[in-house]
Image (cartoon, one colour):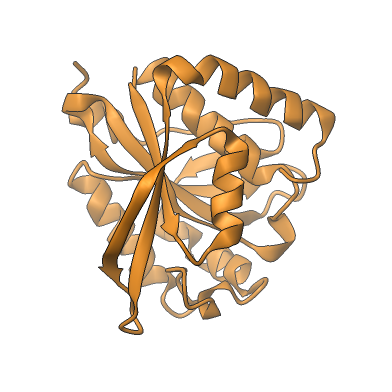
Length: 204
């Protein structure tokens, strides 16, 4: 059994396209610039911080890391050297060797470039290969069709829909779609992600 601290211990994960760095207050200005690319905070069905709210969001995620329930990362492109988004392990349940990958956003220019696919590969590889997870979850708003399709392309399977699961900032109710990858599926999922990245799949 892995202790919670090992699941939430800051670390760097590096690939060919991206480096996932432990989130830090020093990332504020770069992340504020990245989120302006596509004005992502204006999408009502997501929870993306505004440039003005970036410092508070970083503090919130680091507070959750201190509690052992999250492990937040800043995502840096290796081609430009610039930060292009954020991603996390969240809802960490070390006693049952489960966690969720989520709270993710990317600048518009980073989408469909392979960055998300490689970032997910790095996170999944660490979760299954190092932490010994038995399952990794992904959750998204039912309305967010782009996110649902991206999760399915990873190889995750839909477990179900939590109806009226969350109250959104505008007061609307979110139906949350739950996906997961279990340990027995990981080798095939890994092979597929590696193949797609090597092929330069435009849907990544």
